[in-house]
Length: 315
Image 1 (tube, rainbow, N blue to C red):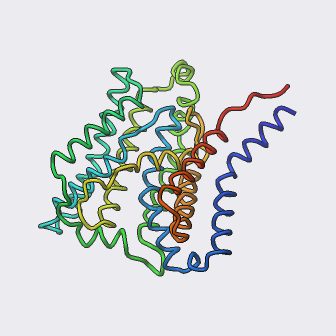
Image 2 (cartoon, rainbow, N blue to C red):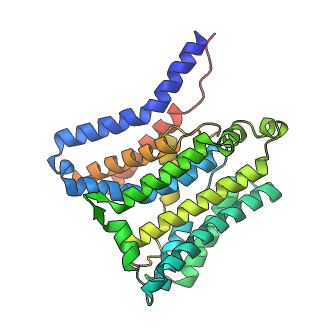
């Protein structure tokens, strides 16, 4: 009976985000005609792309039993630097993309190295990195700089047969990292590390390398999200990344990834992003106050965390 209850609970946890998404979309489509407008639906998909890519990287870190609060500022730094470098020479787009992705992954590697060598808690370390990057951004500029190249703007805003290019990019990134997360030895070792790092170490898993790789993936995804965000904004706005890290964490938890580590899914994390975006879109269409929206999102966060708490098995 206990095994049956555990199996039923896991099924509910894995399907919960899709039930929430179906209810949100169904209710919105039935009661708000403008929600069904193709332009609005395309806008929902575009808004989901940046946060979706961030959430994919965050899933790796959280499932490994850690957390990364620096991803929002990594994205913000990329927005500022990419637009600043491309403002006068859009022909450098490919080189800037490669440089920014390398920068993001490198910042992630620094986070991982410090966690491994100095044994700092990831929450404290990445909060410190967030502050360092934010200070660096505002030391560099306190106003919008440069301009995104036409290539970045097209990737963020254009469509192919009615499907946003940014959504196609999100799906491609999701497919690659889903395979890495769920179909490779690295992914299995990641889950084992998040479940119990000491047991994983005793089983011969290189826990330090797993943590290092997870932070590098998180930084890479943050930089990629920053490039898309730069294309959406069109200019290097220094506050572009503010709060994105919290939204990504909420989406990951809403998608069923345990904050304690050892369980997760990048597909469900993206499902959590789309659900949050749909809810936000509906609230905006209904002209709900921003403060009320914060209250509602807070309730969603608390509910998601409570739903993911481990339950004591009954005999």
